[in-house]
Amino acid sequence: MTEVKIPPLYDKKETCPLCQTAFTTKKIRTRFIKLEHTDTDFCPTYKDETISPLLYFVKVCPSCGYSYTDHFSPYFAEGTKETLLQSVSAKWVPQNFGEERTIPKAIQTYKLALYCASLKKERAIVIANLLLRLTWLYRKINNGEEEKRFMMLALDYLNAAYSDANYGNSNLTEIHVLYLIGEYHKRLGHYEEAISTFAKVVDMKNRVLDTKIINFAREQWYATRNAMKQA
Image (cartoon, helix red, strand yellow):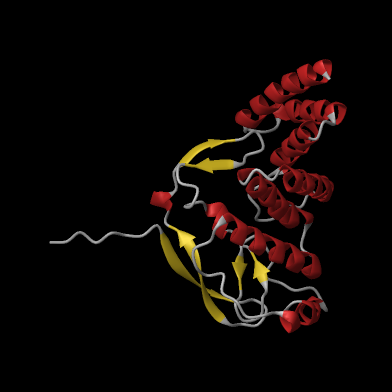
């Protein structure tokens, strides 16, 4: 009897929240996701980078162009639907992002989602999540200039998210956001801001259960001090 090979990708049914069109988008079966390591800003590296959840995080409606993630609110503030229809759908050239994606193709979906998120007036944490992932994707293709550009934008929105203290259903909590603010200050050479922010994370040790992130912050505090001395 011939064994049936199960592919890593499968079609997930979606209904566009904007135009109600039914479409499919690719998802990865969990058993195929093999994480090798993560960078200090949580950027994941997978054993097979073509089977990366990063590539399929954004869903794009092929009919109207509305692009979104599971972190987006299902609600549309007054006037935002009309704005999206005028600014996105009216100019949309029908295309299908529901097949296998390369990193450049995935980058396109993130930029579409960023545009939609800004028009929809999504929370800062939602936009920060998109910018984080764009930073990681540009790192993977060794585009340092774009990586830095999106890192700076991510830092702005992480600061806004920390001020809002509204993390919703995102995968980032207060301590993760604060840690990432410190990490991106460090990567951008803002050493004093990084040291101050990492110290705030370490000071949270008595009120959070995530000792791993506390230890990360402590290590990065020392690393940043050393980097500042060398600079």
